[in-house]
Length: 110
Image 1 (cartoon, rainbow, N blue to C red):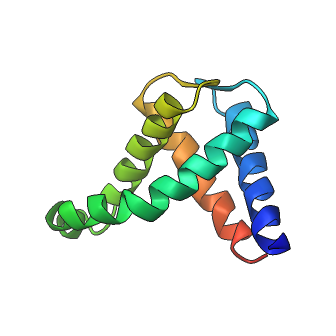
Image 2: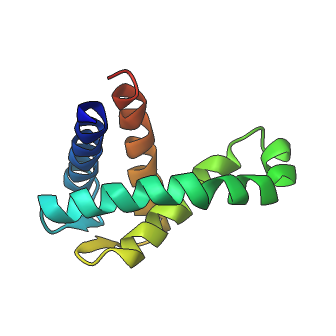
Image 3: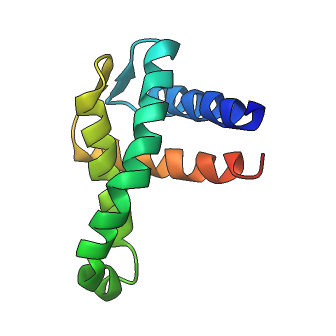
């Protein structure tokens, strides 16, 4: 249980970090980042596998690089769902999702 809580706090810190370094992503406070972390986890659990399955042909053609586009679109979707997070455009969402993916790999080692 403690491990899950630490990963959730770590994901919220990663979201705050992405909001700080990427222009075009605004996060109001840490509570909003915690809510966004929970929503991102749920979206990655339920929606992302279906999207990857539906876009399997284009993923094969692009050698898996289309998953970066899916991550950016899901990041924009989470920003739409959670009040207090603003993402200005696809490029900001792309870089935010990329930073979040790289940092969450580090979180998986916890």
